[in-house]
Amino acid sequence: MTMPASPRPLTQRAAWKALAAHHGEVRGLHLRTLFAEDPDRGERLTLTAGDLFLDYSKHRLTDRTLQLLLRLAEESELGARIQAMFRGDRINATEGRSVLHVALRAPKGSTLRVDGEDVVPEVQTVLEKMATFSKQVRSGQWKGHTGKPIRNVVNLGIGGSDLGPVMAFEALKHYSDRHLDFRFVSNLDGSDFLEATRDLDPAETLFIVASKTFSTLETMTNAQTARDWLIRGLGGEALAVARHFVAVSTNSEKVSSFGIDPANMFGFWDWVGGRYSMGSAIGLSTMLAIGPDHFRSLLGGFHRMDEHFRTAPFAKNMPVLMGLLAIWNTNFLGAETLAVLPYEQYLKRFPAYLQQLTMESNGKRVTLEGQPVDYQTGPVYWGEPGTNGQHSFYQLIHQGTRLIPCDFIAFDHPLVPLGRHHDLLLANVFAQAKALAFGKTAEEVRTEGTPEPLVPHRVFEGNRPSSVLMAGRLTPEVLGQLIALYEHSVFTQGAIWNIDSFDQWGVELGKALAQAIVPELESDPDPRLDHDSSTNHLIRRYRRSKRGL
Ligand code: F6P
Image (tube, rainbow, N blue to C red):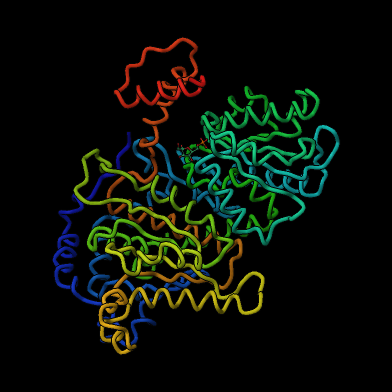
């Protein structure tokens, strides 16, 4: 296992100690005061990177805070870690792998090496194969077993092999070919498959089995069910599989033993983590939906942010700054979660996508050296599109007892203008960020003539931090930049916490236990159960109920 040399333990770094002391000095400061004392704050604490604009002025920090956070990034050797990633070093230390999703979006002709071998040409070859296939399907040239063109595409995958594709499909629906119908099946619960396929004609349906390992229980179970459904629907013709199944995987052996022709397999590589894979062949459904040119623009957007992250000085580096804001809010202000609130309905699956990206990456409790951390790591990311959330959970963000930093995401232009909708939508973004920051004092509430007993209920304490992230409009290129921004912010946080942001051992235990329990649920004679009393009882109860007892 290759382990990069680590800097001094986090809580012993000079900048960390200085931040802890500084927090003591500024903890009582209110955003009202910070803004009153610095009339230009709202313009000054902003940053543009590519097509993205970030207003971070409504975070509870001073210039000194920023200075110390930037120093912390230096002391954490963030620069060296960024270079190590782009150099193809095996920075995923516990799995001994390089982390090179940036190579997926590197332009043709550029060079990125893994073990001395330039991987960009193979990436380009797969992209070209995807483009050829997409054009055939989109034009109707690719025919199903009975000679009918494909009308429905069903992606079978889970985690990174589902969330990226479904998020991108929803986000870029405006650019998609509406003649094709897209469905995404991820859950082991059979109702997911049943609902997704109940109105589909097998003769017009293409399944993409998307699985890096091609061994994930959910995906392989759904793929088997899909195979049976297809063969049954096409009169028992097993040969039909060839025209209706393609695979996206790193595991060609398993793909062929499933019965998918390797010619219909789109490969990728072990240096692409599942949650970082939507720019690889895992994005095949995205390319089928929006076409190869838009897909290239999406990759172009990713690359633009990759380059910004690689080259911009930390003080002007948007992902670094966002990562540092998360460190400040998590480790010093004590925030436990971060709400992602897109004011763009097309981004409705973006928070779910970010949950895997952020929480599978930074949900770690030991350092790269295997020592337990003595500080908090990855916050809980969650969210829903605005304005819907305003009528649901925003109450707690405004007046609850917890500090919940928010990322508001909005666009200057709607994809399709409709009456006053967009002005009303944007007014709400600006109003929410303002209300969270400045609140409403008891005096202000009284001035409105509120009866005294109601005053405490109507006070808004304010001082709730938020970022406002904006771009012109939601294009494929902007989406690429937005995702890469969060990816690199996650990287920044992980580098400072000195954890492995690229493994996910935490998902293993439950998987192994489930494998052991399956035969205990399925066996005919009552099995001997050696679990704890709760698990034994749950299994016995389920077995009884299943038999109608
Ligand atoms: O169980 C977690 C995980 O390994 C994710 O990291 C991954 O994105 C997902 O499962 C799916 O894995 P695969 O693409 O190999 O089916």
